[in-house]
Length: 238
Image (tube, rainbow, N blue to C red; front, side):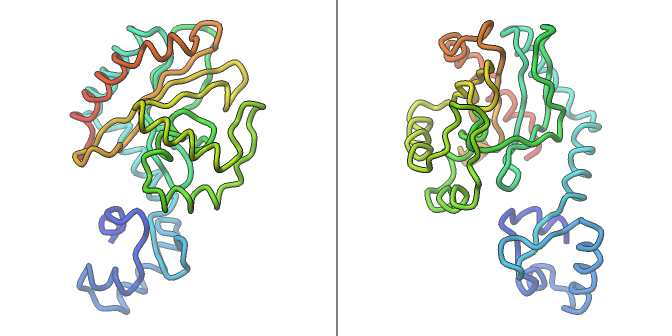
């Protein structure tokens, strides 16, 4: 049941889930109630839809971090950090937030600490804006309408029309920038990690204090990031 829900990020109705599994409806209903109480599934959007909950997410993150098969991913991130000299992170879209899946820190004493499993907003981070840009227009409109769009810094984009313009720019140039929009003094660049259909399954980002990582230098790192993103796409679980 959990595997079936994982294949449908938007959630499934109890009726659709029962049809997909081919199980008796009372059994599905009883199991759903138990899993919901334990936090493995939640009501998504409509009260009639079910989706994976926080317990499932915590389990999957633990599995990803402990799996020996992740050594190639860590090696790619470590090589990227050694080359660019700044912290690199791998993020995924989780609901209406950005989830840190993996991270390799730079050796600099001044850096932002965000552990895997941390969540940050969509509208004011490089990875978040990248995910927004690659959403279908209707989905992006729904997400933006539901988000509070609070200003994390004076440079945060909080106007939906401005975010739409930014999304078009990101799609055109192929990367996203954080111009001190999440934290004052911190800049970042993010590129997509492509899936089999060409749409991003994750985002690869580099960030650092503006005193070390100017926007011009960040953009100049794009070819290195793109190459690392392609390498990551080859080692991520299908």
